Length: 80
Image 1 (tube, rainbow, N blue to C red):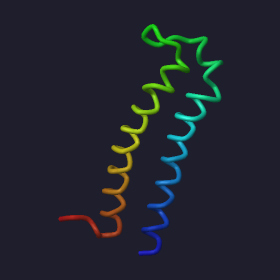
Image 2 (cartoon, rainbow, N blue to C red; image 1 turned 30 degrees about the vertical axis):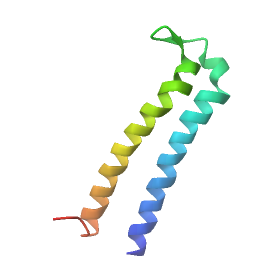
Image 3 (cartoon, helix red, strand yellow; image 1 turned 90 degrees about the vertical axis):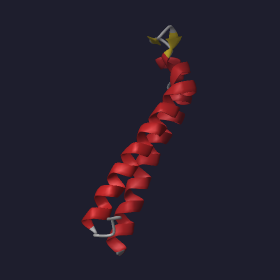
């Protein structure tokens, strides 16, 4: 069971790191560079700050659910 929680926390760290990079890195730090590109008529840095990080967070939720369902089956703690 200790390996289960270790993998679970590993998934959390990786997924939250991705979200941090997208929201803070793309939305704030790299915004001036990304603003040279446009997406749907908006500057890309602005888009990541306003919409992109939210979309990525929703995708991360679905990825986490998928990973946890797979992990639960591997450790036989899934809901049957």
